[in-house]
Image (tube, rainbow, N blue to C red; front, top):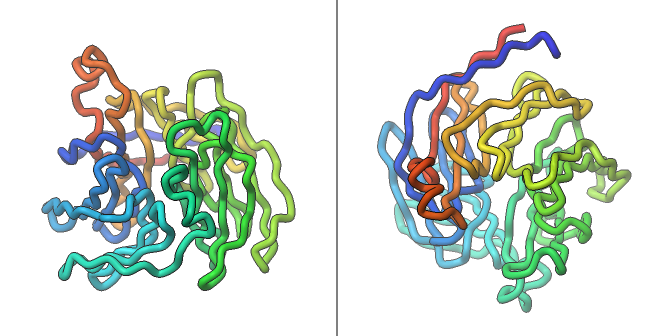
Length: 280
């Protein structure tokens, strides 16, 4: 893996102007993501960008199929009909009486299971979040020890990387086929001030965006850092790969940036498409 040569070339900048762009989903040249702060859902298809308002604060797009978007939100799992612009609550999260305190954050798939995480809205440092495995209509608590859960990248069957952005830690979770936790291992520790955010796996390489790191970190499956790919934003938030076009999509945030930061990084909050090439 150390002999891999990875290059990215900017193909397009999509002016989504998000405060907190996140929850990226990409498949067959169609993409969807959210702006958590503005409760917006974005759909990019056939060179057209569509924006929708979501009443239940969205954080993660799980799927888009036949005009229906499956979202993780502060209230739980929600479906959204693009044509009718109608939301339907599929399942309530266990802490629905604490929505004013917690909101959903990142999520993903491990085997057949959906995972959805929640973080404290105002003080995650002193209030760790929750990570749930969704079993049909029920929620099984996987962990309540991470402060800002992120990443959710399955690297092997029933083995998934979940980051704690607050502590700069990336953990490897091993999950039994019934959804119970078998093991939790510290997979990587980032330098102080750099937060691992969303990511994906491409050809056995792990791509993780670095909030306040202006880059994507590329690891092998053992957690060894191979390289960093520089980006034109301070706070990239997620990346997903479209195998059909060999393109890497990246969301970003402008949240918390000063006017001087925005002057230096004027594309903060937009979504990027890069042509990706990996040579062995």
